[in-house]
Length: 217
Image 1: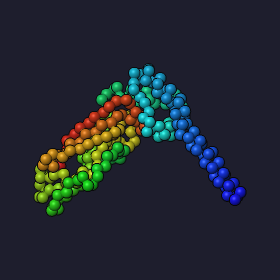
Image 2: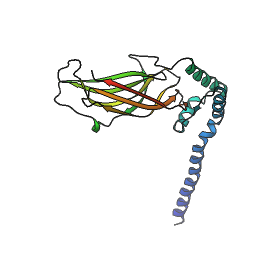
Image 3: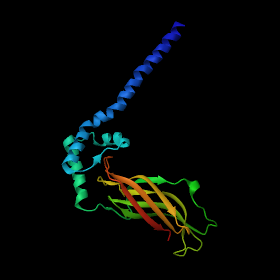
């Protein structure tokens, strides 16, 4: 009986020691980011910018910048922000290439299905939006004849924003989005809402909205 009680007390002790350690670790991210947050506050004061670290990005930001000194971090932020004021940010790469993406996936049960199957193609369409990014629409189009102008959207699988994978400046990060098909299903209008964010996860307190209407062809 004493052995059972001893084991039970040991288990409780382990739990008691483990929980505070986890809680302390969870609290430490703000402390670890403290020196960098001070840099952000200084840069915002110097440049009149609105740079911040979204709560959901804190771990990612710290892991990306922990090897930088505060001086290097300050220089990086200033260079990124000043690059925005030189000209209107736009896509830096078009056509084929490697892209990073913020993707919104569409539930297949919401897709429209047309039969019979004559000509069906899976396509990706893009349109330039702000902050070195493009809007993309991933869909399946359908035509009974294959003649240009007769295609309609059969299904929408995903949409969102994309930017060149090697780009480290501010891109259009997606917070939410929606799409709608025209009554004849020949056009699809996509709307994205988001904010500028760099490759490290540092963001600007700016609300972005982009809308584009794609044609099935």
